[in-house]
Amino acid sequence: MSDADLRKRERIRRKRLRSMIENLAAPALALALLLAWQVAVPLFNVSQFVLPTPFDILKRTVTDYRLLLSHGWVTAAEVVAGFLCAATVGILTALAVFYSRIVERAVYPLLVAMQTVPKVALAPLVILYLGYDWGPKLFLSFLISFFPIVVATVVGLKSLDRGYANLVKSMGASEAQVFLKVRLPAALPSIFGSFKVALSLAVIGAVLGEYVAAERGLGYLQLQANANFDVTLNFAAVFVIALLGVGLYSIILFVEKRINTQHGAQP
Image (tube, rainbow, N blue to C red):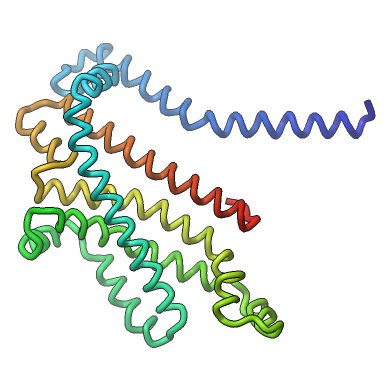
């Protein structure tokens, strides 16, 4: 075997090793933190009523899985609905901002002003106008995740060099063809980056809405656990919320990789 083949094999081996380390880094860190937590609680004689161990939380999650699932499905539906509304309206708004200078000057200041208002401050008004059904949770989930999608999509659409767009047009491509074949693929990394941020914000918005106006959902379950001084159930609800966020994030990541593969781009 030649030296070139040996060097190539070594590069491939190092690349695989680096990829494996990168994939295992996050789970290893999470496991280390959980082990430290598990050891620290009995070591410092912390009461289970103040801080349960990860094992106790996992045990409670398994024991009350039906209760957690019944509330978790409600929260998941609110998150998905709010995110889809934010993604749809956000992308349409970004297109209007990108293609119209008037819309950009009119809408952007309103978006910034809306984003600076704490969403908790809007909760009483949201309840007043939308009641205690799905409305408040859906609206808060939409509102809190809408802004990053608009901003990132506009930035992505503007990332294409104007000279390159003009070159494609000079070859006979229409504006629609330029958008679909060139501008949109160039904006995909920014769009999917905003989706990842917006999805985590949508979870926050839905749970926040459940804190102030709900009869179902993981946020509502947390309030009930607090009222009963059930710290372990509260942590179990937090654990399920985290799983929900990670699961939805993984779906976005999977879709991003598939689309980027089709367009021949890197995620």
